[in-house]
Length: 457
Ligand SMILES: [Fe+2]
Ligand SMILES: [Fe+2]
Image (cartoon, rainbow, N blue to C red):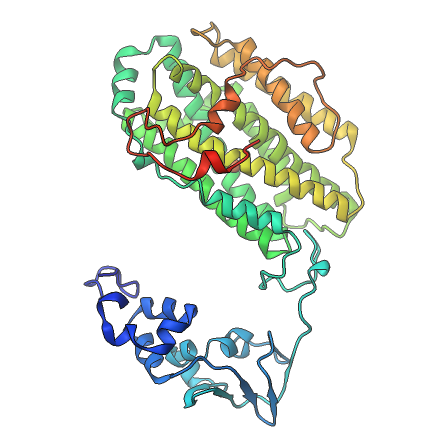
């Protein structure tokens, strides 16, 4: 039985598999799109039964075309959009379509659909992928392929290999550890890492969803970023799940970035740099605005996600390495995998923009960006670890930031900001590469395709 998506609270409807009359129907079994519609409810199913074959030809008044890829309606109104032409059976089921002047008649002929009421439909030229651009493109944003950026589609496919929810991970031992095993300085670390990360991830969701995604003019880029928006929300859920499960005071934890200067500083820097891309009057046809957007995205990918986030999980991993807070650490491992992809994708997009727009990152602006990020991270580390905990110190955290920052700068094609920085936490990279099939945390997450198939960094 399947959920009735038209009315989720109603009784489930029978699945196709349990209804032989649907299974035997050609239009259901042969057409992937029709299968999807059948699952949506009985109204669509009835229409599908009238159509013996998917339409292979469309005819407009006075003119017939042989199954072109797309049509353009000169009036460009919603009723006559190309989607109506390509999904006749679905449109017949739609009550809106029934009342329109442009009604598709399904079933009059086994191999023909008739389109009435519109005098002209001008076929568009096929999409040339070379016309696509990351920004300021004039191509068809609704047509996925042919790809110009197949790597972006690969990011989307890979992102879907790292799929989990926080409920998959057993937190029982963490509850015990928090209340009985952690020392005061370790409680301080744990709580403040969560306080910073949860605020930062909401900021990340807003930035990618509201400031960045809308500026992309190739659908394969937007589709990955849509997944990224979801993942940032999932990360927020994960922190909230940890906070709830452990029994922390939610209001106090969430409020911490407002009262702790070292957390607040990182959030304020991020807000300032990311707001530059979010302002409503930004015009990417203007060089100054374009440079500002690129720098903002470089900060987001290279610093915010690629360095601060990447480095931000490590204090919890240090506890995990001593057998403490292992459930939280496993949650963060999944988040870390997402963030590595986010950072890599953002850096790739920035480089693509630079190439397409024939621009370079301003060295002085990058220098300022790294210096500001380092100063904030150093202060944050001192606040987090006024005294070292076993196996982890503020100096380790600071130095590891510098080491990771060099890596992100190289990936951006820029100069290393901190030459000679040392890999202070060589186990950190292993965290994102750890495979899940060993079940060593005794959680029920035992098998994802992730670790073995992906190159994370
Ligand atoms: Fe995130
Ligand atoms: Fe992210």
